[in-house]
Image 1 (cartoon, rainbow, N blue to C red):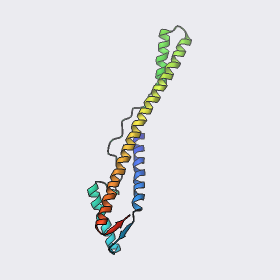
Image 2: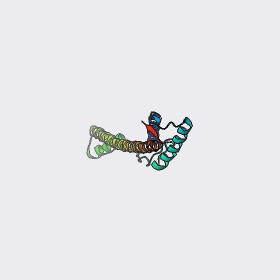
Image 3: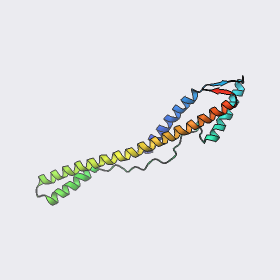
Image 4: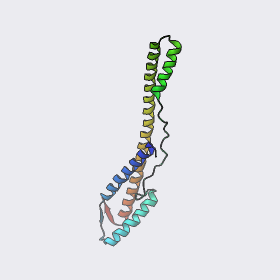
Length: 159
């Protein structure tokens, strides 16, 4: 499993755990004197109704809505830049000092380019993780609203 997938699974599991904690913070008060047995039945039926109507199941393992972004393998920007610089220094210069200087400059430019590339790749992953976390939170919120509406319709106060 690559780093992106591991990160995505961790993010979604963290959301699931925090979502379960928030669902346990819901207080349901029977306004019509419903028995404990009736409350359990109503909770179960409302769970199914909310799941069917929202398309979200809080009991299911979290999944992603889209594939993680494809990331390119890290290349050796510094080494490539140094090699190109050394060749250029050898071709256009006549001394070893010119070749070394060109290799150092090429290595520096290669390192800068590699850093920029790595930053862009990481930004893609970060953006995807934010979109997935937002999608999960939105789906969870829709489920919670449907669940509360169902229970309120059956004579409960939901806080």
